[in-house]
Structures are given as C-alpha cells and as structure tokens.
Image (tube, rainbow over the protein chains, first blue to last red):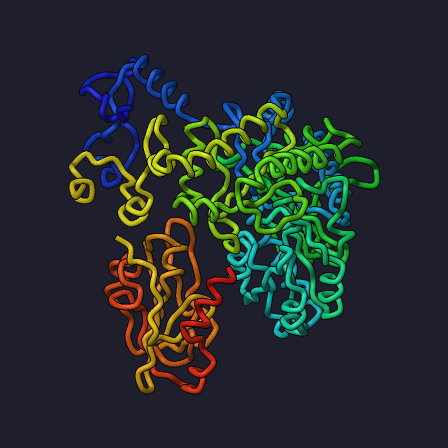
Length: 488
Length: 131
C-alpha cells in the first residue's frame, strides 16, 4: 500500500474553501510566519477517503477478531457504553461548569468511587490517575506522604517487587524516589517467602504485588506475606492489572492490601491498545485517605454532590479536573450491566483461561502446573529445543491463522514465554479455533519449521526486522532520500 | 551470525549468567552465551562510567534487545577501568563473540577474595541444566 505522500500530485485539493472578499491579512508577527507553505499531501477528497478507509481495513482489533494479548485484558467493549457516553449531558459538559450544573456527572463519579471501594474492599477512592502507571506513582506518593507524616520518611526507603512484576512497577518506584528490592519466585510460581522474609525490615516502605501475578497464578501465601509486611510496619500496594480475575470473589483489602489501582480500561471495558484514554483510579485504606489527590468528589449532607479541595494533607493534583470522565461513564455502564452478578465476569474469565490452558498444555511447556486465573503462561522452549522454533515464530505464524498473538517473552522468569488471556467475552467456538491453531502450529514446528520461521506469509507485511527498526528507526517521511534508508 | 554455544574453561561464572576473566588484581567482565542467546540480538548497552564502582551481585548496567531490557549483574566488586566502546557502538558484538570482542568492562578488584565464591564452568553448566 502506498503512503499518502506517494499519492500526492501538486495542485490537487480535497476541498477548496472560497476566500471571502476583503479578508484582512492575519495578525501574525513577521518573524513567526512560515516562509514557505508546509509540505502536506495533495490529494482529492475521494483519494483521501479511500486511503484512510483502506488503512482502516489493515487494522486488527477486538472488533475484528480474537485478541488474547496476555496482561492487557482485551475484552469486548459494549456498544451501549458509547451510546451512554455520547448523551448530551455527558458529552457536552464543560469541565469548568458549576457544580450545580454538573450534578449528574458528579453523582456518577461518586457512585463509581463507591463501587470501586466495595470491589477492592477499601475505604476511599480517587478517580484522578489517568492509567495504571499513574495510579502506581500516585499510590507511592501516598506511601511517601504517609511515612513523612509519621516521621519515618528518611528511615523507610525501600519498596519490594517480585521478579514477575510489570515493568511499570520498578519504574514507578524509581520515579517516586524509592530504592528497589527484588524478590524471587518459588517453584510453584508464588513469591519466595523465605527470600522475602530476609529482605523486609524497618527500612521497607511497601510491597508492590500483582495478585494474581503475571504468571496468572494467585499467590498461595498471601496471608503470610501480609503478616510479614504489616509486622514490619510497611504498607502493601496491589497492582490491579489482573483485577479481572477476582472481582466479586476476593478483595485486595481483605488480603491486607492498603492501596489498589484499578485499570478501568482493562477490567471495566474501554477501547484501549491504541493509546488510550485509560483510567487508573486508586482505592486506599482509611489511614491514607487524607493524602489522596484533590479535588475529592463528595456527597454533601443535603444529598447533592460536590468537589472538596479542603484536604490539607493531600499530595495535590495528579491530573486535570477529576480525571478522564468518558472512561468513568463507560466503566460505570459496564459494571451496572452486571449489577450484583459482577462475580460472573471474573468466573467466566477464569473458566475461559483454564479451558484454553487444558487444551494447550500438552503441546507446549507449562512452567507451573496449576489451575490458572484469568490468564496463563506457556513456554515454547520445548519447540525451541526440539525444532528451533521460538515464541516469536509461534506468534508470527498465529497471525497467518487470523489471530492476534499472545504476549511473548514476558514475564521474564519464563523462557520463550507465551502469555494468553482470553477474557470472559469470547465464545467457546472462538477459543476452540484458537486452540486448534496453536496445536496445528506445534505440529508444523515438528513437520516443517520453515512455515513458522518465515511467517507471517499472507499478512500485509512479512516478518519485520525488529532489530534494525530498534537500531535505525526512520520515523518521518523522507522527502529527501534518507541516509539510513539508502543503506538497505 | 551469532556465536555457537560455548563456555570457556578459563572463566569464572556468576549464576546470573555473567562471566569474569581474572587477570591479577583486574578482571574483564561480560555476559555468557546463554544470556546473549536468551536476549537475542542486542540493540543497546547502557554502560557505567569509567571510575564508577561496581558491586558483586548488583547491577552495573543494562543490555537491551527487542525482547527485553535486562540488568547486567557484576560477578565481582571493583572500580571501572575501561568500558568496551566497541560494544557501546555495536552491541551485537556480544552475540557474535560473547567472550572475546564482546567483553563489557575491565575493573580493578576491590576484594579479590570474592573470586573464590564464583562458579567454575562445571558448576555453571549445572545451573544451566537446572533451568
């Protein structure tokens, strides 16, 4: 497919706007004006429409097919969410509107906070953070504020993270000014409790834990872990990346966690994967509530709703206004559709994952042979050892079968990792078709490994040279021949 | 072409897949074939500065491939005397020759007795076999 600049012909226009008579020259200072016109593509309106329509057919998303990208919770985003968020009272609301003119929106935010407090088993919620990563940073800033207030700020400098954690965890720890303590995974895929015990002391500020972990396994020692941390006077942070596994079944607050972030865009449906917007609210135990971001969305004594800025210990704002409002409407709609049956969402997510795991575990290596939660991690190391086919080769071949590949090479503790998360919104027929493809690929690795090595065969582009793309990225259109491109 | 799998007899190894070639009170450090193969072709080496201190069992830099960014763990403690600029400019050198041209650092040992705790090639092969 040609780039739109390659279709450009000098002088062509998609539309020509007549120039009104007597139009004044724009009042732009001479030194700020362009000396020459920008080099925009010149095409007719029809070419423009065809170009972007064709591009849109090259896209692959949850609306076109199965998308089992582990840890990303690519579930169906119900269309009714979009109808609700487009209601004029939501869509045309201005962020500076007076509180009495935005009561419906404030009530929705307050009700969402109440639901998230219940789901997490905690006391107070701020919807403000824009995504999971910002929720993590906000949570760690609360930890800092809490210990500073207690006079333990200089003493508690370390945050403990298991080696299965998402990369955002250590990044957040560093950004929040803490030091990282790594803890290992044991033979059953849990945190190594002995390793943990040796590393937690009066200098520990917090644990950051994803439970179930990125291995899709629920930590069997969670009660012992919470005992270790709370005896040391440290706090516990729950990375809610995998909350889709436990909603309505178990609550982080009951497991001893003090802070939780919730990925609204994952657990509670929101088109994502294309850059957002996401939503990363945090829920906290009452001892941390005074430090939450402002403004807090509150219900007043007279039953109206408002914004409370009078929080002297607050860490301040972490995002504009009260957060990504459109995300709140969609997630609220999704949760209310389940109503008291929210538990079924997680039950079916776990059931689907275990069904796919049961069908695949003989053809691929299973590093931890346990029932999984909402996702699981297989290893292609058997295919690599016996036939030279890697996790990347399996993933690329899967594209020929019409599926988005699973997450590969993560978590790092599993070699040749393939991380599969089907979600609750897929039909059994789809899961079976995916399993059939995965089993066929394992067979192809044995019979004709070149089919995997050269894959994908019938996609718009063949195997990309990822190494060269990383070393010599060409990220702009070359009107003049680029030196890097010329090397090839 | 990536190098064929090998683990030279004259090196000492760390279980995090790092090697050391001890030369008097200095040592040359690098990552093993296993580590280079697991990462795939390297695209970046984040090196410490000359003069910096490295500590046994602690990370002194990062290697990055299209699969992952990974800490490089120091098998020994000491002061950085030299960084392999060839690898900084062409990180794939590590994949081509992990024990030769693909070395990463030269350090002056601050605690030479740490060498005794490192693995010999047989012990390192047992670590690999247990993975």
